[in-house]
Length: 212
Ligand SMILES: [Zn+2]
Image (tube, rainbow, N blue to C red):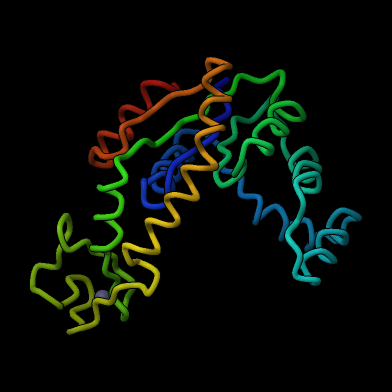
């Protein structure tokens, strides 16, 4: 059986794309958001509790998320990708102790220079008409300001929060929460670092080598 993977990476590191490709290799992607919605739809006791918390506009606490994971994961039979949870060291320790203590687990860190990330994000443009995503430096449209996919003119927009100030701030918050997690998995010899500045296919090949 393949190990469980804890996916760690800054916003814009490409970890979402890589996680999606791993699903094709037999991993099951765990989204705590989806689990929450499904549990509510089931109308279980836990679902009703979660529904109450969310209706009040509160965040679902870590113990409830853990209960949800325990109720829905068969860690002895299925290799999971945890993406977006754990978000901090407290959640990482909890996940390890309460769900993965007997399982082979690898934390995969998509490491990328913050300058590259900021560049990626501030140069990102999205077609307001069809949603196609461009990057002015790495993937510009063939004709400036015209969408390759749908042909819309002047529709390439920058998202409001894709500014240097916003992304720098998000990256700082990310670094503060990820550093203790990296130390935690490293101390368990369960940390793998992948150079996420490489092209998508190269990153994926590197990933396949360490996990398969
Ligand atoms: Zn378009």
